Image (cartoon, rainbow over all chains, first blue to last red; front, side, top):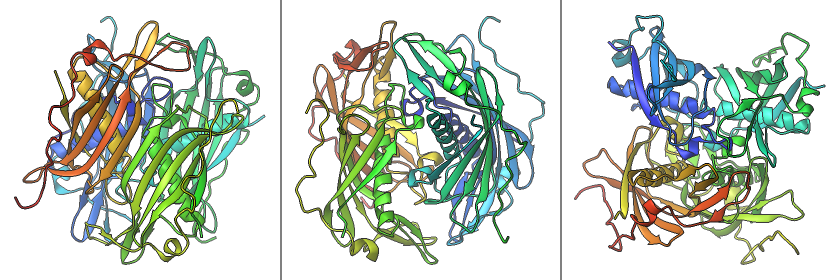
Length: 155
Length: 155
Length: 155
Length: 155
């Protein structure tokens, strides 16, 4: 059973903006990449095209609090923790830590809730459906109330 | 005095993803474009390079709830309402309405809080500073508690 | 008959990078937006979902030469000219002019070639097919060899 | 001395568009990521902020030919080869191969030319300057005229 995952990702130049830092919307790309890597690690996928249908995992809500800027070439650890799970949805807590210093520094915290959806080919609308077995059976809510913050600076 | 602004924006092909809808992170680009157009309408700008300093308006927190997908070529009205204001920060409520039908349909709701920051050239870190006069004097908190939802479907 | 189109677009903050200018890949988004606005102006669309099939206009080749940087809030005119046309493909020349000064300044020049493709729902691969009638009948190759450069600076 | 580099990259969901494939502009992000990883492998960086100046490596021209679509979760090898080098500029040939099948399949080919630029802090314009020593001394033009295409399908 899995209830957390850490994805490491460098801030690329295209992720930055004229303020010299990663653009705030880039954090949502990072968040989604971490989530998708989590499913991949469990032998599943966030988006599957089958012969008679398409399945996906869209977000129903997301949020992010920005604590400290990150810059080009910074290495980030995107840590996702399962906080909620039903047959058709998963809720995550997300923490972004900047690596490369003496110890990781938490630079942002967020959350996202995703649902599993299915539609037939040629059908415009999606229906909320059960998670694929690989996720339903292998993902569980994290046991502890908090994964523990990571601080930078003097200990 | 201004306390709300509506920005109209078409969903471009590059905003979509393989699920056939606007990618969830695109809504944050739309949100920021609306905010920046608001400042422009007041004769100000979200990002200013002066001779001895750079000023910007980064986000400290954002969120979005997705109610209904939007697709390529859909026209969106991004409606921002000022909910909070101090000398150094502004908090917004955001509503995304899909236009083009008999009446607008609210497809997403969000929020963002921005602060005003300044740094000298060659200085790496930003300091939170007072909003420029054009914004400080002309932006106010919206009087009503809610701008009223917009529904689609049969009237 | 139409053989050129001009699309005006402001450089948004999310289009910029840490060098303080529009990221080079943003020009390809601008190019595509201009092309799609051209089809829209002719009553057609670059991407259509019908009951039994999906039609699109992917690029087979693109290029861009960057002459001068553009920055946040700059207004660009993206001028596309039809240079080549067959029953299934269109080739464009693209010129990006920065507006707002005494006269427009050409900041980039590019090209793109697009083909029309169709696939059935649930079918993975696309087939190159004839352009929709609205484009086939109304688009023609531009008569002159060059639309004329635009210079800035002293006249 | 180095004259080529291969960067491996998965197609993320945010890279795709409504046609179900990687958006054409995403290839330019991939191209830039590969180039920057090449400099990193040589102990240098594409973007450096020093106390009294900023240095970068902007593109002066790019192009891409698209041979075959790539989809969400496909793994790409982005292969860059040095084709031209002066004290202030580098020209690359780029090949994108899709991995994961019996053998790699070339899905796109491109090119980019970058220059090295410097500006002082608070200075708006960039000057073309010599490449940093780590690049100037360690990068050379590739000896062979072509790195050899990679084909998929029956051998």
